Image (cartoon, rainbow, N blue to C red; front, side, top):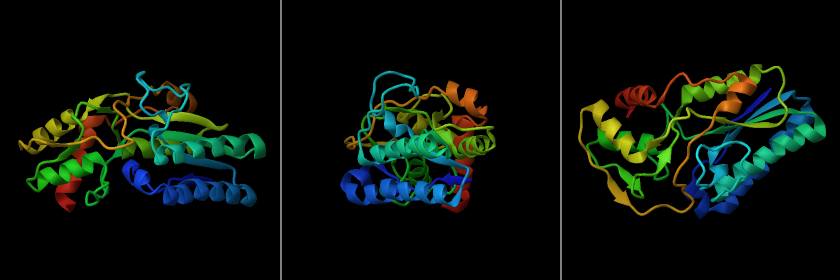
Length: 241
């Protein structure tokens, strides 16, 4: 069994350097599926991405929606889903694609200009700086603590069978970026206003998951919702920043 979690991440980086992202995320994923088939591997659990939905106005996002990726990264991850399905249909390799929604938690690197939102916000506020928000901050995300993602992977591994399905992994909870800043300030007893910057190419406005299919296929249920997960992440950054 293989857990395929590897990728070059970051929507803005993929917009700047699509060729490198293609080579790593599409070619690399194909090579992994091919090697797994030739080695007689039974199952691959593939880390897919909610970015495959693009900026469709319908909320929540359901797996039956036609994908509409806006960035090279989103397209890369979507192609991986297609390969997962094809390797099941053509070769009988049990596959399942877990579309993660905005994963956060301890160990996320806040130092890069491409850092994930929560790690960047928390580290900035802990340093007494204004967090940078791209856009007006009213965009929404379904933030998913890493503990939920790990549990989803374990459930996918333990499932009786997998047949190339694509399922959302999230909390089913919509949070604006401005609410994230407010909650961080509340948990840290601080009051740092965000600094707003122009929106970034490839970013979507709203992202909320329907997790019904995940419940049905692998018995997934999120156990750590946004604010509790954020509190845990903050404690880690306070100790390790």
